[in-house]
Image (cartoon, rainbow, N blue to C red; front, side, top):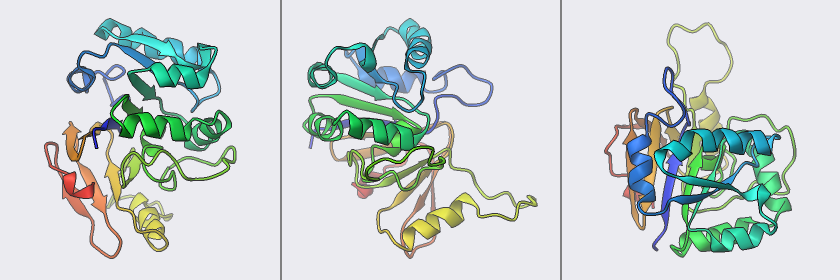
Length: 234
């Protein structure tokens, strides 16, 4: 399998500009690909979103082409060498991908090594088998929770550790992921803000400036630091 996938927890970390903390990882991942097809479906204002992404990524040497400005969405994806699916609401993103009948086409081109895939937040959620481990509210209803299945593990971007001094009495993120594993088997990567998972073929590596927490059904959570080899999840 010749897929190239970059899964980012968050486009920003506190005190830094958009994608600044992972600038070098982006440049390394995209290599000689400089035109990126941007998918803005996770928020309502597609024009504003695309303009904002272009404003930050084009000074890095990229040319951003927004999918919604193309006359034929499927043809644009069929011709693209790289696609970036931005963050926002995962329910909205998934519903729109189904409405445009893009799930199968994106998967086919990425798995076949014809197109690189970068996702941030919601865009990382939909890279897994399902979107079931998103943190978002269901503001719209997608026809299915099944997503691209570019990797066999689930993502939980913006993962937050339990705060021992907190007076919050509701469920923690860890509690929610345990609930997921009462009904599902797929491993879940709790990716903290500032974390990235890069997949090339059958090799997966944790990158970025923060670590990740791995959850597997029936097992205690495991901690991983940047640089860790996560290929066993593939």
